[in-house]
Image 1 (cartoon, rainbow, N blue to C red):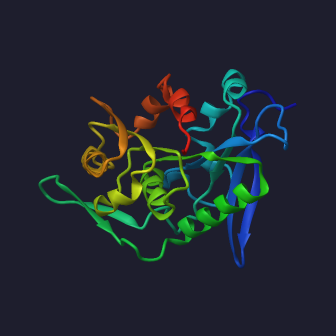
Image 2: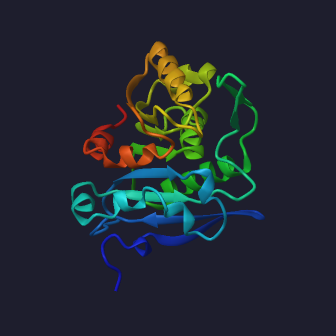
Length: 245
């Protein structure tokens, strides 16, 4: 018998596009009813969970959506795709110089990575096949997935109501393309893997462009700021309060 907070509640699926494929897990609401429309959460994992076992992507964040009380309060469709081992959600990278200053390397409007291409096709397939509330589509992710969150919003203007990137970063020049989304950005101030400066600068660019942004910068926290983000009691109430006009 499957119990509450058992990751097997996330059904195993594989999305195929020609010779390419992307494993994913999908959690349907309690008392799922195809006659109703549900919010959709699309979550992008970090680089350490890449592969094709269709398990690792649930390592961080899945439990947040498995609590019965939360599932009853916030019925939603939740999808965790898995990035191939040789790809990345984002075409953005970063470098740190000898003084510790970070800089973004971004391919801008060029074609997406294989993982981003498949993720976007999967998202379209989910929206087509399931009863999704088109005004309440959300995207979030951590580390590599935080970067992918920014890029997913950039590449799909007008699709998402809210986004929650954790310890990521984005293309500062593309901030004007992301202003229709409500943001909650998270980062650890002492992150030694993805510098907090990347989120700080992205938040500044989004606010300057006119976006609605919340920012949680956690003092003394390193790369695992997702633990703090997932522990925020206001995260899910905030997320589900957002809808497109």
